Length: 370
Ligand code: DAH
Image 1 (cartoon, rainbow, N blue to C red):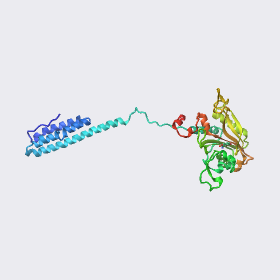
Image 2 (spheres, rainbow, N blue to C red):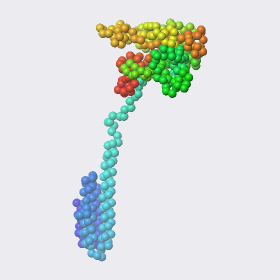
Image 3 (spheres, rainbow, N blue to C red):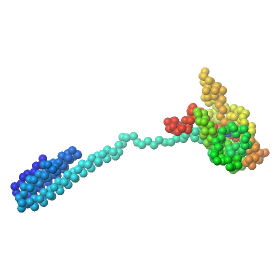
């Protein structure tokens, strides 16, 4: 390691050699520095107040110089001091730059890391079921219509032949909008309880022949549990034309059920009542879980309660009273209508035992359908 020599000749020419020796020692020691600890050693060797090389040249060269030479020696010593300080600073910059560059290199790209996963979304099982049902009717020549979820009393009830205060309104526990009391009864707003109002809206807009399916959300004041939800889904259907009979209703719905649940499924029509159809029928299908026998081995089938049948939808021949609301000639036209709950069908098709799973947004449930 470099040590400072004593001088005996202080003439300018004689100073050149020790200055050059010192400078080359400085450069050599600087280039040997590779990290923070070796830099600190380097700095202290050259700049420590006590016995650093700068202190030594101050003592051994400047202070020892005879008075006439002091001026020249002082100039050289000052130059060397600036050189040393610059070298120490540059060396520090070099190693800290190298350190951050090494860190950057290691952060930049690790091709062995797993990539960023962008999971694909998927159709919600209810939407998929709704599309499946709509697809079956589209294939039979039906078009698709939709209507508002906030509906007037007129479309939801009155035009469907539920007069004000008619007991049939009690079948659908309705959610009404607040602040409607000042309006005439028929204009008051509510959340539609079924998709049937879109039957009327469709007939108001177009003349027969009508063949339309209407998917959508509906609302009732039911507490949520495994089999109920205040918001659920229906697919409605309407066919109006000349010469449409109950046979068309039976044939169309039988075909639709076979398309949806498999060709071995049987249908059964049971008398019922809806204000907007006459006659009305409930449609049942043979149980898709036990094949209609009511038993799975020796066990009673829980899906059809051992009856062999599952009730699936409401239907009927359009009550001629409805044609009066939309300006169709009831002597000329006839038609049938039907409405089914999508949520229960989706639950059956996918083996879901709690309807709430469809609506509480748990990705662990939903991603099983992707
Ligand atoms: N709107 C009825 C309901 O929500 C279902 C229904 C029954 C619709 C018979 C129809 C029909 O179009 O003809 O309970």
